[in-house]
Image (cartoon, rainbow, N blue to C red):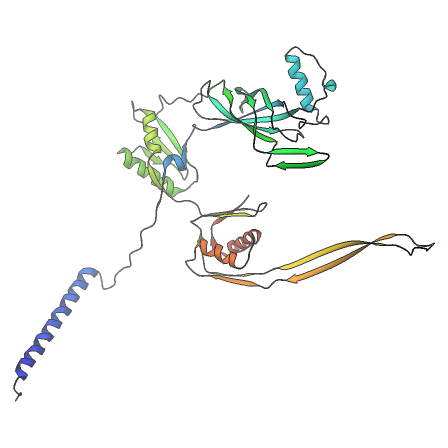
Length: 395
């Protein structure tokens, strides 16, 4: 039989086993509730996609409501001997024609000045511009002038693509640089042959674009994308509370206007709607300046990169070979000596694993001493190898 006191210990053990069985049964019950009747496996839940929100006005435009470019040709006077030279004849012909309109007849061949320059003028005409609206003007030299600093643009008509005059420009130039020339020595800063005139043009003819009476408008995405077009139509309809927007293709969204609706208020409300957009993965490179811009949506696949180079340096020196002082024969000769130096740089290796970001790529390329032009070649090679899921645009 059991010794004294063992009965209580046995009862405690039985109670412990019963409690453990109860917990196991509860655990199985919760497991079945979580899995459901379909099976025993739990499907993994994908993490929610990060959405980039932007206003409609920032990623799309309304068809017909856009800027228009204006251009004109004129002359700048008042330069301090930094204008076009006498070899550039068309500024002198322009000045002669200008003087003739003012009643002064002077042949172009008789004009000897260096204080004027022929220029092209450009301006942007915004939508809904009316006569009297002032525009900023950009002035650029068309001849061989050294600087436009201190110049005055004479009254110049600005033409649209249809050949009609829409504005007239005039005023003192604001130059963001300078050019000095003394005894053949030239010192310049920035671009002294390009200048601006703030509010230097006056609109004389407005652009006709009537909003009243329109039954629909067309929104145009800046970057064509079917997903972005569909999302924009959905969010606009949700904000307006009716089916007013409908995506036509990857760039075009049609917006219906109800009869009697206030069109300016409708367009203002639509432009303020925040919608998700999905930018195109793109890498932009400028081989002239060595600039590389990589978008944040660029996806990198696992890749191993070996980077090295062969540096060849060719140095030529010219030395003079002369005969002896009292020699009656021989002539002085110029001898060219060429030295070729070849340096094989060690190969550097970097490895990008799955899930690497653009920041990881840039840091890895910087760690091996890759220059901007090296980065351009490496990115193009990664694109060819399928490790760079992005479009490469070369400027």
